[in-house]
Amino acid sequence: MTQNEVKPRYIKGQKVFIKPVDEQGVTRREYSVNEYAGKVGEISDYYYISPRSEQVFFMYHVRVGKERKEIVVYEDELEPAF
Image (cartoon, rainbow, N blue to C red; front, side, top):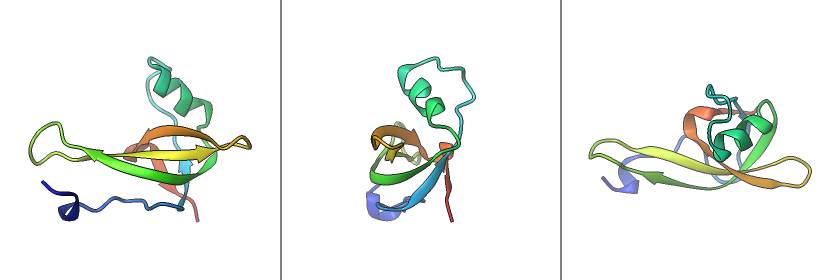
């Protein structure tokens, strides 16, 4: 599957709300996401992984907070900010 066949839900520069991760900070990434849950961030980059054929998961780099920290967030952990 090529990137042209699947479009990301969010684009660079788009403002998004970060949703909390259901797990209680099991990994460092989940802890970072939960630290910024409910805040607005900006998509700085994205990529996709395809662990199995026909399966595509987008990952987003999101700048958030006053210090503009960049965290990695799965697509289902974001909502568009209007």
